[in-house]
Image (cartoon, rainbow over all chains, first blue to last red; front, side, top):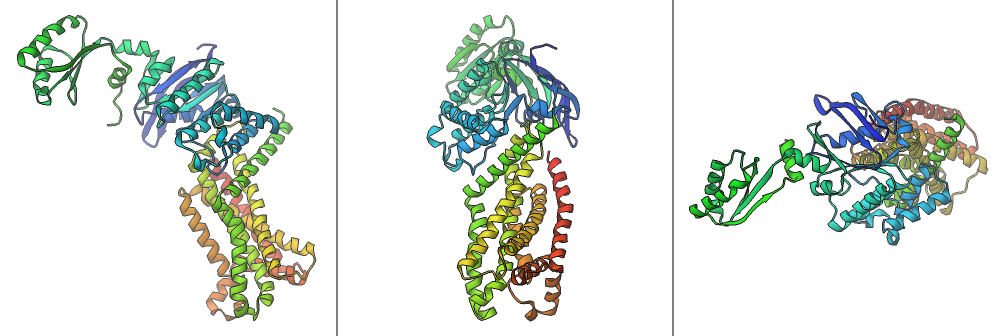
Amino acid sequence: MNNDDVIQVSNISKHFGKNAAVQDVSFSVEKGEIFGLLGPNGAGKTTLIRMMTTLLHPDTGQILINGFDTQTQGRNARQQFSVTGQTAAIDQDLTARENLMIFARLSGLGIPAARSRATELLKAFDLVASADQTLETFSGGMRRRLDLAVSLVGKPTILFLDEPTTGLDPRTRAQMWQVIQSLVATGSTVLLTTQYLEEAAQFADRIALIDHGQMKAIGTPDELTRRVGGKRLRLQVTAAQSLKAAQVILQKTEMNPVQVSERTLTVSLDEGEVGQTAALLQQFDEAGIALSQFAIEPPSLDDVFLQMTVGKN
Amino acid sequence: MNIETSNTHNLKNMVTMTHRNLLKTLHNPDNFGDVIMEPVIFTLLFGFLFGGAIAGSVQSYLPILVPGILLQSILNAASGSGQQLREDINNGVFDRFKTLPIAPIVPLAGQLIGDIFRLLLAGSMALVTAFLMGWRPVVGLPMVAAALGLALFIGWATSWIFALVGLVAKNAEMIGSLSMMIILVLTFLSNAFVPTKTLPRFIQTIVNLNPVSYTVTAIRSILQTGTWDLHATVALLCGLLIISIFMPLSLLAYQKQN
């Protein structure tokens, strides 16, 4: 336990019927962090967020938000954070400005203050031109931006974002990250879920890897990739028909299982094996297998993900 | 936390939520149609269509029609309550409300206070249309207000039933069409639009048992003779009974939402 921890999750479990959605998960998030919850579909990320935001009661365990218990001090806990769900939770029948105004009023601002806060956010999120249109005319990206803007109305110090960038084009995604980062720069804490591993690796300070409701690993992106360890050999055969032969050669020399996808073969290398790869090249040459790619790579977060989670397949 | 300031907060939040609710009505063509267009169209339609056949002329039919169309317009507007609640729940807006530091009851209150305004608007539209068609109340304005008030009370009681349906059933469209059907059957199987004497006996029995008939009869006697008779009291009690059953049930269903 640490005084800088703004979110403390202790031994949380949640069952839906017989299905265990979250099992004995504990972690804490420090002030000013971008904390990423990562995991395959159905891993329990959204269930965790719903419990942290008081929408769902855990079966066992405790969650503290700035020291307030989500179960016994719900209203106090709710004063500490704001949340943006997976689907844009904004009123289709209202204009962007009206949406912002209503949430500004509900978070305790007077009418003039609410009005200027709404205008401020419309500017910040590039929505001024469409401020007074109902959302029917809005694109998906505009909706997500408005959704996030609504969450920021009360200047929350803790922000929960459930897949904030899913389904956005690269430009809007970059915009989204800019907003998140500038928010963190002012001292806020962000906990988010994402399926984009590159994003998590690039932006998150720490990552928790969840699978089947269980915590698999937690740490900085570097720590996690180091934990998977070793380097990887990746090669691509030029002709698809030589794939089988290449796999046989590779499997004979390498201890680790070979992964095949289309014309690409990947295998992780143990310590000391890196030096032997030159011999491999020669073997391919002798067998008459032409390679279009041959590379030794450090592990990526993808590898961590694949190695540590099973998913629901 | 000081209880008094917390209560004024709740009140302020309810006002905001009601405002949101009314904005939605005004912006959404569906809701707008229910509340404003339907009362106008039905009053015109029924007046001109049935006036001659039932009462000899539009002018002599209007006094019979007005109480019925007033209540029907209001009940119709009330039937939208469940669908709107369900839409809010389904698209996640309610989840967001629940994560705000406001009393949990505020969003539901916003809907049902908004309903009062919606019903008032629908009832007024029917009365104004009838007035433009030539209907003149024979009693004073306070009695017209009393008739409108009674219809509003019954309508608001009914909107609690629809609120419960909206909270319990999952599909918004289904709730919409189901609500509409219930209102149509309830209002047409009553004395709202036609004299009951010509109806087959078994239908007469149903019609006489229908609480809508009681209310319409009560409104008629208020509007025609200015008297608050037994029917009005029975209708009022019916409304109270509905509220005392469905308000707690709706609150319970709302709290159990997650």
